Length: 292
Image: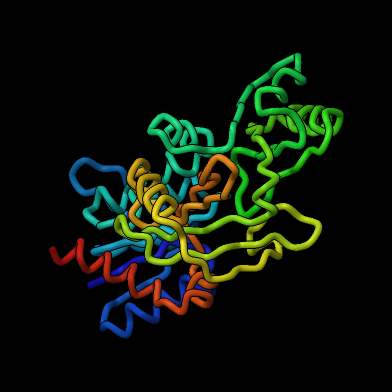
């Protein structure tokens, strides 16, 4: 079997682990930089070129596409699918999940509880917009942000108005969310593979920060999730048609709330803390779908 990983950096832990596991099973696996590719959209013989050379057929592809290259990466992934490759996460699903507004709308419409969220292109009365999410403190998020980048807390009305206005000047798309104080800077990352929560960790923000992302200096610990949290994570993955996904949940006074969906969850933290071979589980998923 031949497997492609779509990633700009083959030295990342997640890529290295996937490559190691696949090679140990005797498979050919290659990391391909999406930006080195171009595609031939052709009804007779659709194809992909890498550095000017025709790319051979791959049985499966693992998308590890960053937010900054999401548009091109997803369209390239679609071309792999058109050429017959199985994708761990489908291009259509990634498009929906990467759009924070879209994913929250779909989750909420299906009964998944989320922090109260508002979205607006322009609103002269910022105070009313702030009141929609219960007033300050509140969270302002860039729709296109990731790994905690573009996420700001506003403690007062004045601070919230200033932050919102600043983002507007930048013509940035933003979400405004209620701040869940009782979460105390903690969230839970549930890793879902093929409709099963295979691992979960609790992430705690560093002192002086509210963002629990490990890329922002947060710490992670092993945790046993509740049955309700497990079912919510599985349902969220199913709603967005994702086979490998990190579902982030915070514990609030009114129950578990889904805050983020990560279509390219990093493996380093969750493997090291859980002691589980997550990369092997992803290759298992590929085998199941390619050899069925």
